[in-house]
Image (cartoon, rainbow, N blue to C red; front, top):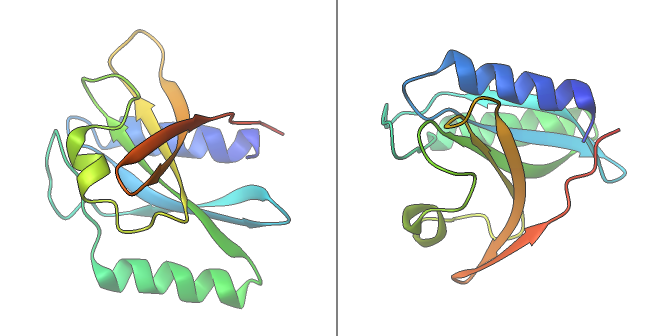
Length: 128
């Protein structure tokens, strides 16, 4: 992921406080560089959901740019950057990476996960 994309995600997450923020990231050649902030239609401090229309739009626009959708991000305003039970149970995109941004500490924390069939594996997030 580019450092610019990381800053965009963190800024979006901070801007949406006290609610969870969410969005999608895309790029090419294994390098995520485009951030797609998406409305959290749940407007919740502990959960997020995106409309199918917003998701479809991002997938279409990414394809038009010859990019691949690479991951989903969301924030935890008051919790650690660890997938919640809901994050695991309601994961509809097991083939995409999941970025969680914690805003509970002095500085934002960002972690990357693979979530598939109830299993969670933390991945290494590389910045370019």
